[in-house]
Length: 358
Image (cartoon, rainbow, N blue to C red; front, side):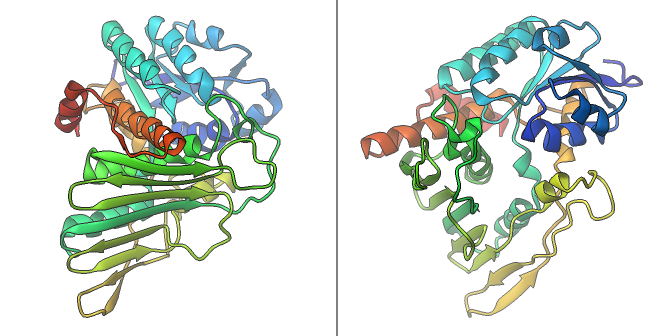
């Protein structure tokens, strides 16, 4: 692509993810031009982006020869089919998490993108959250020694079930499909692939049609990773808790970027990504030190996508990373259903190649 021209983007879907994440992040990335949005919500879109073209069908946006990058922010069960359509049309594609509903679909898209020589990436934006970046820094500094226990929570309090597809008994709905990819991807980036998975997944709210609570353990040779998400936590739980042979660290509050985006704060403004909640580092003598949280910036994902399309750097989230996440999601559901510990359903080449691209 010409480094002096903008990369034209079509955003398909303008629900929560499209409106509050992809739209603002793309718009505030120099070199990307949000040209087209596929949605029926014309008035809302024009209020947010007066110069964008609104069309009614994914096919129209995908077949527009002026579009360079297609971003899918649609219901989970549509990801595979729309991504395949875009790839076959020769478009570069970003897919919101979860990548697909099945490992077969994910592997098919990876192969298809390779055959058509287009970019395929998955929006694992939480790699650029302040809470995760802070914990990552402490682990990599060696201050904890060898990590033996890593616990990650994305918990909410929403006891009433909303009238939305995510809370209905539909393919790709449920909390583990929604939150699981975020916390799984972060864990895999820190520790690599686990040996096996143990999970308990349930619907605990009154009249729940689908899961709204998950407790998943990733088993490694010398440490445990616990991933937890729920819709019935009013507080009192840290976002991260990590124990090592030399000490521990906790991060109480979550990254603020989602709250800022929902409040209408534009990415890149003065307070963007600032996190005033310090990490607490406990040493071997039980002394506590406060460590400032680094600034989060989920724009970094789209900065990297832009630079990948310009040939400057590598895909920030290649399909194989997302396939590994999907393998954990799949194994957790299998473990919860059978009550058994489940090995990661990746092939030997996938495991070997995952290490080489990480």
